[in-house]
Image (tube, rainbow, N blue to C red; front, side, top):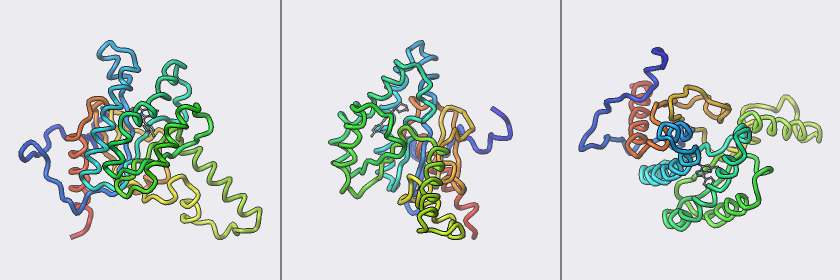
Length: 257
Ligand code: V07
C-alpha cells in the first residue's frame, strides 16, 4: 500500500475498552455506504471457488446490518452488484443473482422484526425475474418500517445514474417545465436514485483498494472515507465500530471548537 494513503486506513491498534470501542451515540454517522470488496480474493486465498467468497460475504451483511441498526445509523447503503459486474463469468453472475433471494429468504422475517426498511438503487432492467420478484417483495413488505433503511445498490453504476438524471432534466427543459438557468445542485440531486436520502457521512471500502469504482460519485463529495485491507468476508462488527470511531475522531477534529 502506498505510504501516503496510510493515514486514511485502518489503524491496526484501535483503542479498546472492554474489548469494544467507545462510541459517542450523539455523533453516529447517519448514512454509511460500504463497498464490500474482497470476496473473490478471500476465496482464492483459501483455495475455494469465488462463489464461496460471495456466500461468506453475505453472512457478513447480516452482522453489519444488525450493528448499524443497534448504533442508530439511519441509512446503510451496500454495493452488492455493479453495472460492471456483468462482465464476470456467467456462472458467477448467475450465482450472485441468487443471493438477494437467498438473503431475503433467510433474513426478511428478522428484518421485519427489527423494523428495517429495504430499498434498492440501480437499474432493475436486466435483473433476472426471480431476483426482481424477491427484492420487490422485500421492498413492499418493509415499506412501512421506520428503522434503518437498508439500501442495496444492485446493478448500480454512478455514471449511469447521472446520465439518467441528466436525461430526465433535459426532458423537463424540452417540455418547458424547467429553464436551463434553474438547474442547480438541488435539481440534480432530486433526479438521482438517492433523491430522498441524505448523502453518506462515511464511506467504507474493504480489501485494500483505494478507489471509488463508479460508486455514488456525486453523493460522496463531502463524505469521510475509510479504507481497510480486511477482506469483506473477514469484516465484522468490531471493524465497523472502528470505522465509526475513527469517523467520530475526525469529526471532533474538524468540527471546530
Ligand atoms: C451479494 C454478498 C455480500 C458481498 C458482496 C457480493 C456478494 C446481499 C445481497 C442482497 C441484495 C439485494 C437485496 C437483498 C440482499 C446481495 C448480491 C450479492 C448481488 F434486496 N448480499 N449480496 N446481492 N453478495
